[in-house]
Picture 1 (tube, rainbow, N blue to C red):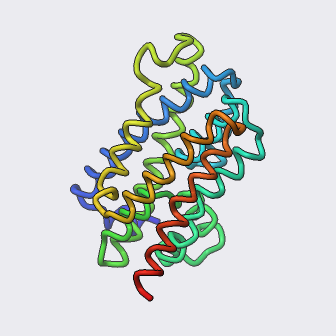
Picture 2 (tube, rainbow, N blue to C red; picture 1 turned 60 degrees about the vertical axis):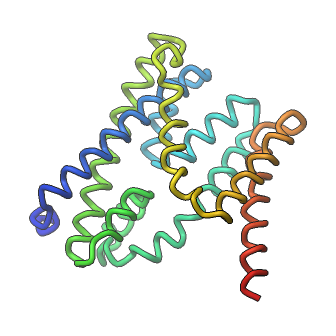
Length: 227
């Protein structure tokens, strides 16, 4: 592990710090929103420690707060995190060979750690980038969730300070580059239309799952184009 920290360079540390700062803002938003939704303060804290997947956590809280069942929240989270399967295949070599290292490394497998690792051509630097980013984000996210939950109890309405808008804004910023591709944009628009059309009639959580019709249509269209 010491060799990992020796491999870090100032530019990488700066980038990791910037991403960790963004994760802290989102973590505080999640903690405050969870408490405002009626959950006990410790629940988002435990969820963050055990799940550590921001998008899935926001979705789960949103579904439950909207009246959806825990089963729908779990299913939606599993679908959202299905992308981690190819992620694991892509960066499995940077986790290490020991069982303990692979277990901890798998828990730190998120979009940011994968992106940092794949951006490095040198295997040693890829490993250093993965672990430094993972540890920094895990610490920043969980500390911010605790702070957000405690602040949420005090202010009552997270919208008073704009915390409720932090995650949607960050998520939109992340998805905008992908929407430059026509097939991706069409799939997103179709999925959004399906979710909006079914929201008034279906329990919370199900419209999000039905929005995957956009993804299915995109895959079908791409396969037809190749044929």
